[in-house]
Length: 142
Length: 102
Image (cartoon, rainbow over all chains, first blue to last red):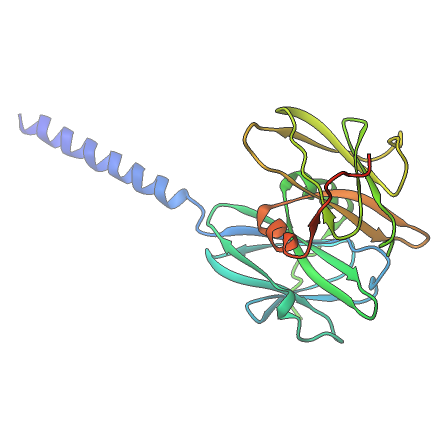
């Protein structure tokens, strides 16, 4: 009888550890892709990708980068050396763990200025853009 | 750039709308695979144009932006599928294209 009880207890312990392991296997972060394929205009200038006021990547044209970001609300925006304040054109995004987000950098020409901002696009549209671009690794490092 | 031109939007090889700058149009389609494309002008789709293929599901909404990217010698026009999060910001400044010029 004691053996049987010990066997059941051991079974419960093993199954609970398996459940705990399954819980830890869930990703705690989200993947965010920054994609820059902005064409001829401004192609010589690096974009500084900022998340909540801190620079996470300096991005050249025809490049993309991948970032693991903790869940939460963020403002994603872009600056350049001649446009250091551009938060008004930022994209506010609620990032959820385990999801993938594709943020495309866009330059829009107005009469007297250019505006740079993010567009959140679907995986369907991101795939052909990613095929054209190279992965920018360690783009946040100086 | 090209702000005065009405772009031609095609659904499954047929002209669906002439879309002016700062306008949007709404189309109701049957579920299933559909091909979307755009060009600067004209009533027929170009042969070697890149299409956006979407397998539409009933009851869902999809947002496609006609995008112009400046290249060295000419601008290239393409369709980009964006999320609702991006589209809702754009709708603030856009007006609906009612007759689509067809």
